[in-house]
Amino acid sequence: MEQILKYYPNLSEKQKKQFSALYELYLDWNSKINVISRKDIENLYERHVLHSLGIAEFIKFKAGSKILDVGTGGGFPGIPLAILFPDVQFTLIDSIRKKIKVGQEVSNAIGLKNIELKHLRIQEEKEKFDFVVSRAVMPLEDLIKLCKKNISPKDKNAIPNGLICLKGGELEKEVHPFRNIAEVYDLSESYEGEFFETKKVVYVPL
Image (cartoon, rainbow, N blue to C red; front, side):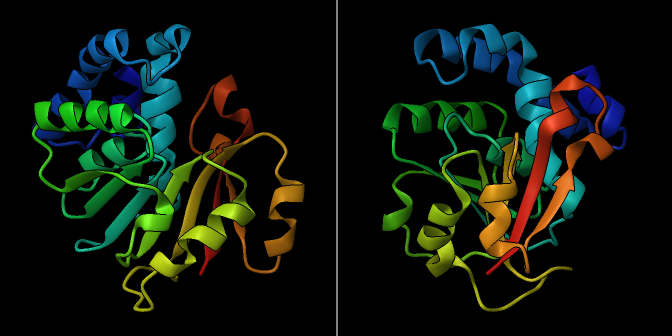
């Protein structure tokens, strides 16, 4: 939790409580339904919560924006972003029902009102959104093909609507087909530590 406060010192008391509650909630639910690697749960704030908030280092969503989190698993990056942006509406989808159950229970427990979780595949989602976000769900090209239909044509943020992914490792080949339009942001510019040295935000306007 100290890591969250280090980078986001201006959180409201409500946001601090919500972030603070995540560890015990995920620890409890993870013992019943494995959504986070068992050895990784102790690194929840760095590797899952702070990593999810990396999207906020690239863009500050305007109030009223609608965001779709594809392949959210137990609620990442959607739940941390929904805490940080209480005036933005988040829809979290995953094809695995038990993972959606964990995300729903966690969001209910911390009183998130700006979030909806659905047991759904991206192919089945019909709504339009300002941005689609995801965390290493599938190769960029595949994800773009599937979510292009869900991007609203009306821009309201500082950058055009599109896809924002959290990715790690060597991305040159994956980003290459979109090199003329994609932006890649290194999270090591925002966050300290070995974990973030290879982590990036990839943005493709759609």
